[in-house]
Amino acid sequence: DKSQAMEQKSLLEQQINAQNEAIRTVESTIAQYDGLIAEKETEVAETQAKEEEQYALFCQRVKTMEKVGTVSYWDILFGSSSFSDLLDRASMVSEIMKYDNEIMDQLSATRQELQTFTRTLYQSYQDFYGQVGPAAQRMKEVWFFLIHLFEGGERHDKKMRRLRTPGEYEAVE
Image (cartoon, rainbow, N blue to C red; front, side):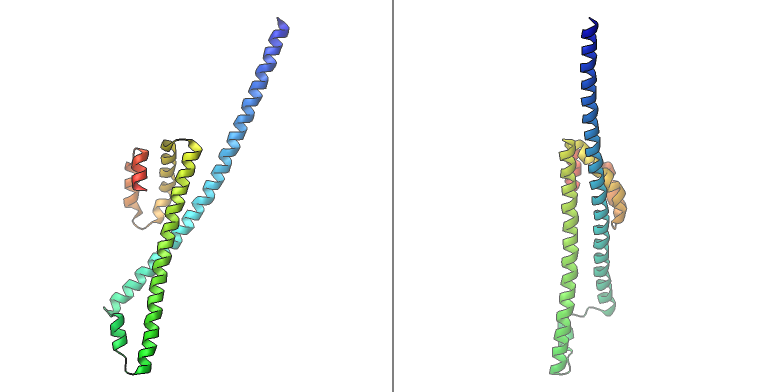
């Protein structure tokens, strides 16, 4: 009877050790994910700062155009005083158009990068948690810290706080 109890105790200790090892493995995995999430949150902040800088450049360009007045590219070209002046102005208009397009392309690419990142992060949370509910809640937490980086973030923050279901989060995202 005593040997059977010792054997049962030994078996229980083995099971406890196996469970403790499983817990350590899960804790290690969680720590790895937390580290990756922290890295990605930093990347998001940097990308958002880049997007804001690009948007500010674009706004500055629009404001400059408003101050100067509504001068079209045609006005610039037709204001030429000679053929060589026309060629110089055509080159200048080409450079301005190229610059404007580059700013818009960069802004669009940055916004696409942010959107791709948030979708990937959300999918990673779904994979990790195995459910959309905790994944959506975690994304709301991420946005709570990042929303102030966006122009008009307060308005979006109010929207995020009102979300109650994963479907509502996915519709906003």
